[in-house]
Image (cartoon, rainbow, N blue to C red; front, side, top):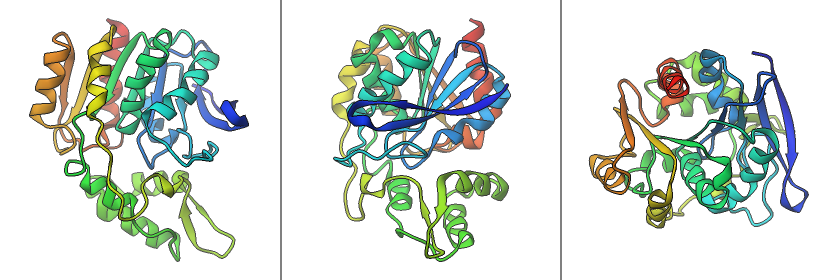
Length: 271
C-alpha cells in the first residue's frame, strides 16, 4: 500500500508524527512501545496490506516532546485520542505494544468511541520493574554514542534473537546523527532517566475491567514481561479474552515474528 507521514496537532501546539498506510479509511491503529517509534510496525503493515495508521508516541520518533517530559499511559492517550478521531475514526482494531498497550487501555477508558477492538502485544498492567528490567537497562544506557556502529552494537547485545539487518533498519529510524558527529536516540530519554524505576501500573487493571469490546493478548513465548499470573488475572477480569502465545518471539513480537503477528491480526479482521 502507499505510505506517507503526516502530522497532527495536539494540545499545546505540539505535533504528533503518524505513518499512514493506504489511501482508504484506516482499519487498524498501531501504537508502539517506549523508546520505539511508528516504524516498528513497518513489516507487520506490509505483510497485512491493509489501510492503517502507526502513531509516534509523544516524545518519540518524529513527534514533539512534552514540556513536562511525562510520557505515561494517561498523557499519551490524551494526545493519541485526538489523532485517532481525526485520522482513523472508524478503525476496527487498536493494537498497542508494551507502553503502547497500556496507552491503548487508557484510550479505551478516555476515548471509548475510538476503540472497537483491542489487541495488547506482550503487556498487561502486571508489568513491574523486575519483569521489564532488561528493557529499562537498555533504555537507561548512554545518552550518546561515538558512532552508529557503537549504537548498533549495544542494540544487538540487548536483542540477541533479531537479525542484524532488522536491527540496523530499526536503529536508522530510531536514532539520528548529532552536529558533533555522535549519534543519539530520537526519543526523549527523560522518559526513564538513569537510576529511576519503572512505575507500577496496577491501577490499570481497573481499565481492563472496563473494556467493553473484544480483547486479545498476544504474548511472546520468550518474553519475561507477561507471566502466567498476569494471564490468569486478565482472564479473571475478562473471561472471554483471546490469549495467544506467539512462539519464537520475545517482548517485541512485531520485531521477532512480524508475519505471524500480521496473520493473527488478519484473522481478527476476517472474523
